[in-house]
Length: 256
Ligand code: ADP
Ligand code: MG
Image 1 (cartoon, rainbow, N blue to C red):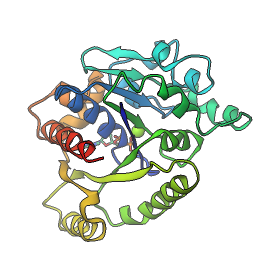
Image 2 (cartoon, protein in one colour):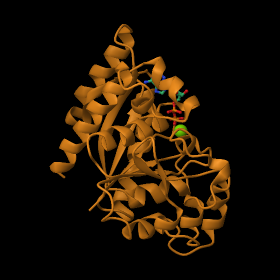
Image 3 (cartoon, rainbow, N blue to C red):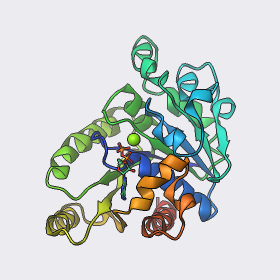
Protein backbone atom coordinates (compact mmCIF):
# COMPACT_ATOMS: atom_id res chain seq x y z
CA UNK A 1 0.00 0.00 0.00
CA UNK A 2 1.23 3.44 -0.91
CA UNK A 3 2.72 5.70 1.73
CA UNK A 4 1.58 9.25 1.14
CA UNK A 5 3.69 12.30 1.90
CA UNK A 6 3.06 16.01 1.64
CA UNK A 7 5.96 18.29 0.90
CA UNK A 8 4.84 21.38 2.76
CA UNK A 9 6.06 24.69 4.09
CA UNK A 10 3.84 27.74 3.94
CA UNK A 11 6.78 29.88 2.82
CA UNK A 12 7.30 30.27 -0.90
CA UNK A 13 10.61 29.62 -2.61
CA UNK A 14 11.98 27.29 0.07
CA UNK A 15 12.42 24.30 -2.25
CA UNK A 16 9.13 22.37 -1.98
CA UNK A 17 8.71 21.77 -5.70
CA UNK A 18 12.38 20.98 -6.24
CA UNK A 19 12.19 18.48 -3.39
CA UNK A 20 8.98 16.88 -4.67
CA UNK A 21 10.08 16.27 -8.27
CA UNK A 22 13.61 15.22 -7.38
CA UNK A 23 12.51 12.89 -4.61
CA UNK A 24 9.95 11.41 -7.03
CA UNK A 25 12.66 10.86 -9.63
CA UNK A 26 15.08 9.53 -7.01
CA UNK A 27 12.52 7.05 -5.70
CA UNK A 28 11.75 5.92 -9.26
CA UNK A 29 15.46 5.42 -9.79
CA UNK A 30 15.72 3.08 -6.81
CA UNK A 31 12.79 1.03 -8.10
CA UNK A 32 9.79 2.55 -6.32
CA UNK A 33 6.41 3.09 -7.97
CA UNK A 34 5.63 6.79 -7.55
CA UNK A 35 2.68 9.12 -8.10
CA UNK A 36 3.50 12.83 -7.89
CA UNK A 37 0.55 15.14 -7.21
CA UNK A 38 0.78 18.83 -7.93
CA UNK A 39 -1.48 20.73 -5.50
CA UNK A 40 -0.17 24.16 -6.44
CA UNK A 41 -2.15 26.16 -9.07
CA UNK A 42 1.21 27.46 -10.34
CA UNK A 43 1.77 23.98 -11.79
CA UNK A 44 5.55 24.13 -11.38
CA UNK A 45 5.87 20.49 -10.35
CA UNK A 46 3.80 19.50 -13.40
CA UNK A 47 5.98 21.49 -15.82
CA UNK A 48 9.13 20.42 -13.97
CA UNK A 49 8.19 16.82 -14.72
CA UNK A 50 7.88 17.50 -18.45
CA UNK A 51 4.08 17.56 -18.47
CA UNK A 52 2.63 20.65 -20.20
CA UNK A 53 0.05 22.08 -17.77
CA UNK A 54 -1.67 24.05 -20.57
CA UNK A 55 -2.43 20.90 -22.52
CA UNK A 56 -3.83 18.82 -19.68
CA UNK A 57 -7.46 17.81 -20.12
CA UNK A 58 -7.82 16.46 -16.61
CA UNK A 59 -6.00 17.64 -13.52
CA UNK A 60 -6.13 17.31 -9.74
CA UNK A 61 -8.88 19.95 -9.93
CA UNK A 62 -11.22 17.42 -11.60
CA UNK A 63 -10.30 14.86 -8.95
CA UNK A 64 -11.11 17.27 -6.11
CA UNK A 65 -14.47 18.10 -7.67
CA UNK A 66 -15.13 14.40 -8.29
CA UNK A 67 -15.50 14.74 -12.05
CA UNK A 68 -12.55 12.38 -12.67
CA UNK A 69 -10.77 9.57 -10.84
CA UNK A 70 -7.03 9.65 -10.10
CA UNK A 71 -6.53 6.89 -12.68
CA UNK A 72 -8.29 8.91 -15.36
CA UNK A 73 -6.50 12.15 -14.60
CA UNK A 74 -2.93 10.92 -14.02
CA UNK A 75 -0.39 10.84 -16.84
CA UNK A 76 3.01 9.24 -17.18
CA UNK A 77 6.10 11.46 -17.04
CA UNK A 78 8.02 9.14 -19.35
CA UNK A 79 11.53 10.52 -18.91
CA UNK A 80 11.11 10.83 -15.16
CA UNK A 81 9.82 7.35 -14.38
CA UNK A 82 6.78 8.38 -12.34
CA UNK A 83 3.12 9.27 -12.80
CA UNK A 84 1.86 12.84 -12.50
CA UNK A 85 -1.49 14.12 -11.35
CA UNK A 86 -1.00 17.62 -12.68
CA UNK A 87 -2.28 21.09 -11.89
CA UNK A 88 -2.79 24.37 -13.65
CA UNK A 89 -4.44 27.72 -12.90
CA UNK A 90 -7.88 26.14 -12.86
CA UNK A 91 -6.96 24.70 -9.46
CA UNK A 92 -7.05 28.17 -7.88
CA UNK A 93 -10.85 28.06 -8.31
CA UNK A 94 -11.12 24.85 -6.32
CA UNK A 95 -10.35 26.77 -3.15
CA UNK A 96 -13.65 28.63 -3.45
CA UNK A 97 -15.70 25.83 -5.00
CA UNK A 98 -14.77 23.35 -2.29
CA UNK A 99 -16.10 25.56 0.48
CA UNK A 100 -19.71 24.72 -0.41
CA UNK A 101 -19.14 20.96 -0.59
CA UNK A 102 -19.39 18.16 1.97
CA UNK A 103 -16.21 16.54 3.25
CA UNK A 104 -14.31 19.26 1.46
CA UNK A 105 -11.05 18.53 3.22
CA UNK A 106 -11.21 14.78 2.51
CA UNK A 107 -11.74 14.84 -1.25
CA UNK A 108 -8.20 13.93 -2.17
CA UNK A 109 -7.94 11.26 0.53
CA UNK A 110 -11.08 9.54 -0.76
CA UNK A 111 -9.87 9.68 -4.36
CA UNK A 112 -6.44 8.27 -3.47
CA UNK A 113 -7.88 5.17 -1.78
CA UNK A 114 -8.58 3.74 -5.23
CA UNK A 115 -4.91 3.78 -6.32
CA UNK A 116 -3.26 2.90 -3.00
CA UNK A 117 -2.28 -0.52 -4.36
CA UNK A 118 -0.69 0.88 -7.52
CA UNK A 119 2.12 2.84 -5.89
CA UNK A 120 4.76 2.61 -3.19
CA UNK A 121 4.93 6.38 -2.71
CA UNK A 122 2.55 9.25 -3.36
CA UNK A 123 4.23 12.67 -3.08
CA UNK A 124 2.14 15.83 -2.87
CA UNK A 125 3.63 19.22 -3.74
CA UNK A 126 1.71 21.74 -1.61
CA UNK A 127 1.14 25.43 -2.36
CA UNK A 128 2.83 28.07 -0.16
CA UNK A 129 -0.14 28.54 2.15
CA UNK A 130 -2.13 26.71 4.77
CA UNK A 131 -5.21 26.68 2.54
CA UNK A 132 -8.01 24.23 1.71
CA UNK A 133 -5.72 22.70 -0.90
CA UNK A 134 -2.94 22.13 1.61
CA UNK A 135 -5.53 20.81 4.06
CA UNK A 136 -6.61 18.22 1.48
CA UNK A 137 -2.98 17.19 1.19
CA UNK A 138 -2.50 16.96 4.94
CA UNK A 139 -5.70 14.96 5.40
CA UNK A 140 -4.53 12.42 2.81
CA UNK A 141 -1.01 11.94 4.09
CA UNK A 142 0.83 9.65 6.47
CA UNK A 143 3.51 12.23 6.89
CA UNK A 144 4.90 15.63 6.05
CA UNK A 145 8.31 16.38 4.63
CA UNK A 146 9.34 19.94 5.43
CA UNK A 147 12.07 21.41 3.25
CA UNK A 148 13.82 24.33 4.86
CA UNK A 149 16.70 26.64 4.33
CA UNK A 150 18.97 27.05 7.30
CA UNK A 151 18.28 30.73 7.79
CA UNK A 152 17.33 32.65 10.86
CA UNK A 153 13.63 33.13 10.04
CA UNK A 154 13.18 29.52 8.97
CA UNK A 155 12.56 28.47 12.56
CA UNK A 156 9.89 31.11 13.07
CA UNK A 157 7.80 29.90 10.13
CA UNK A 158 8.05 26.37 11.40
CA UNK A 159 5.91 27.11 14.47
CA UNK A 160 2.80 27.85 12.36
CA UNK A 161 3.29 24.73 10.29
CA UNK A 162 3.84 22.53 13.35
CA UNK A 163 0.67 23.93 14.96
CA UNK A 164 -1.38 23.29 11.81
CA UNK A 165 -0.07 19.75 11.61
CA UNK A 166 -0.95 19.22 15.30
CA UNK A 167 -4.50 20.45 14.68
CA UNK A 168 -4.98 18.25 11.63
CA UNK A 169 -3.58 15.33 13.60
CA UNK A 170 -6.01 15.96 16.48
CA UNK A 171 -9.15 16.64 14.42
CA UNK A 172 -8.90 15.17 10.96
CA UNK A 173 -6.08 12.70 10.42
CA UNK A 174 -4.64 10.74 13.33
CA UNK A 175 -1.99 9.18 11.04
CA UNK A 176 -0.35 12.49 10.29
CA UNK A 177 3.13 13.19 11.58
CA UNK A 178 6.14 15.20 10.56
CA UNK A 179 8.40 12.63 8.96
CA UNK A 180 11.24 15.00 8.84
CA UNK A 181 12.85 18.31 8.19
CA UNK A 182 15.00 18.39 5.07
CA UNK A 183 17.81 20.91 4.96
CA UNK A 184 17.92 22.30 1.41
CA UNK A 185 19.99 24.84 -0.55
CA UNK A 186 22.64 24.27 2.06
CA UNK A 187 25.94 26.08 1.82
CA UNK A 188 28.41 24.80 4.45
CA UNK A 189 30.67 27.83 3.97
CA UNK A 190 28.06 30.06 5.55
CA UNK A 191 28.50 30.01 9.32
CA UNK A 192 24.91 31.01 10.04
CA UNK A 193 23.65 28.03 8.05
CA UNK A 194 25.83 25.68 10.08
CA UNK A 195 24.55 27.23 13.29
CA UNK A 196 20.90 26.95 12.29
CA UNK A 197 21.52 23.39 11.13
CA UNK A 198 22.94 22.53 14.58
CA UNK A 199 19.97 24.24 16.27
CA UNK A 200 17.58 22.18 14.18
CA UNK A 201 19.31 18.97 15.17
CA UNK A 202 19.36 19.76 18.87
CA UNK A 203 15.71 20.87 18.78
CA UNK A 204 14.19 18.23 16.52
CA UNK A 205 16.66 15.33 16.90
CA UNK A 206 16.05 12.45 14.51
CA UNK A 207 13.20 14.36 12.88
CA UNK A 208 15.96 16.03 10.89
CA UNK A 209 16.88 13.92 7.88
CA UNK A 210 20.50 12.82 7.65
CA UNK A 211 20.67 13.81 4.01
CA UNK A 212 21.47 17.46 3.31
CA UNK A 213 20.65 18.95 -0.10
CA UNK A 214 23.39 21.38 -1.18
CA UNK A 215 22.81 24.58 -3.11
CA UNK A 216 23.49 23.46 -6.65
CA UNK A 217 22.85 25.41 -9.83
CA UNK A 218 22.05 22.27 -11.85
CA UNK A 219 18.94 21.74 -9.71
CA UNK A 220 17.81 25.28 -10.54
CA UNK A 221 18.51 24.87 -14.27
CA UNK A 222 16.68 21.56 -14.68
CA UNK A 223 13.06 22.89 -14.60
CA UNK A 224 13.62 24.93 -17.77
CA UNK A 225 14.29 21.61 -19.53
CA UNK A 226 11.12 20.10 -18.05
CA UNK A 227 13.11 17.64 -15.97
CA UNK A 228 14.02 17.07 -12.33
CA UNK A 229 17.74 17.58 -11.68
CA UNK A 230 18.05 13.87 -10.89
CA UNK A 231 17.14 13.10 -14.53
CA UNK A 232 18.65 16.19 -16.17
CA UNK A 233 22.13 15.76 -14.68
CA UNK A 234 22.43 12.65 -12.52
CA UNK A 235 26.08 13.34 -11.76
CA UNK A 236 25.45 16.75 -10.20
CA UNK A 237 26.01 16.99 -6.44
CA UNK A 238 22.41 18.08 -5.85
CA UNK A 239 21.04 15.18 -7.87
CA UNK A 240 23.16 12.67 -6.00
CA UNK A 241 21.93 14.12 -2.72
CA UNK A 242 18.31 13.61 -3.80
CA UNK A 243 18.94 9.96 -4.71
CA UNK A 244 20.54 9.55 -1.27
CA UNK A 245 17.45 11.18 0.24
CA UNK A 246 15.22 8.75 -1.68
CA UNK A 247 17.14 5.86 -0.13
CA UNK A 248 16.74 7.42 3.31
CA UNK A 249 12.97 7.70 2.73
CA UNK A 250 12.74 4.05 1.70
CA UNK A 251 14.51 3.17 4.99
CA UNK A 252 12.18 5.40 7.02
CA UNK A 253 8.98 3.87 5.69
CA UNK A 254 10.23 0.41 6.61
CA UNK A 255 9.92 1.49 10.23
CA UNK A 256 6.54 3.20 9.83
P1 ADP B 1 8.89 26.34 -3.61
O1 ADP B 1 8.22 25.22 -4.33
O2 ADP B 1 8.96 26.11 -2.12
O3 ADP B 1 8.31 27.67 -3.94
P2 ADP B 1 11.13 25.86 -5.40
O4 ADP B 1 11.41 24.41 -5.32
O5 ADP B 1 10.36 26.34 -6.59
O6 ADP B 1 10.44 26.36 -4.07
O7 ADP B 1 12.53 26.59 -5.30
C1 ADP B 1 12.66 28.00 -5.34
C2 ADP B 1 13.83 28.38 -6.25
O8 ADP B 1 15.05 27.88 -5.71
C3 ADP B 1 13.72 27.77 -7.64
O9 ADP B 1 14.21 28.70 -8.56
C4 ADP B 1 14.62 26.55 -7.58
O10 ADP B 1 15.15 26.20 -8.83
C5 ADP B 1 15.71 27.01 -6.62
N1 ADP B 1 16.30 25.89 -5.86
C6 ADP B 1 15.64 24.98 -5.10
N2 ADP B 1 16.48 24.12 -4.51
C7 ADP B 1 17.73 24.48 -4.91
C8 ADP B 1 19.06 23.99 -4.63
N3 ADP B 1 19.27 22.95 -3.81
N4 ADP B 1 20.11 24.63 -5.21
C9 ADP B 1 19.90 25.70 -6.02
N5 ADP B 1 18.70 26.20 -6.32
C10 ADP B 1 17.62 25.62 -5.77
MG1 MG C 1 6.45 25.27 -5.50
